[in-house]
Length: 76
Image 1 (cartoon, rainbow, N blue to C red):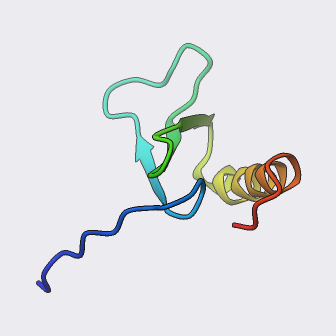
Image 2: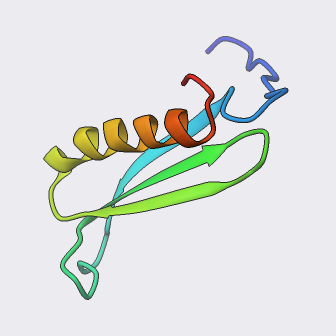
Image 3: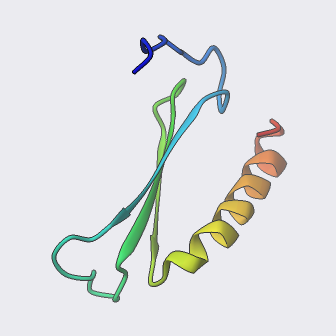
């Protein structure tokens, strides 16, 4: 493996960490089996979205991206 770089954001939404996870044991009360976690490195703000199907993740990410760009006026 190559040496890890110490990336650190200097402004909001410059560096996002994104993880898609599957519930290990049981679905949520509403039946969600997957969840998407998005962390902003600069503000440490976290968004969590729940999904019934993995196929829904990309569409939700596009909506999320557009919402941020519209309201915060920062291109992702």
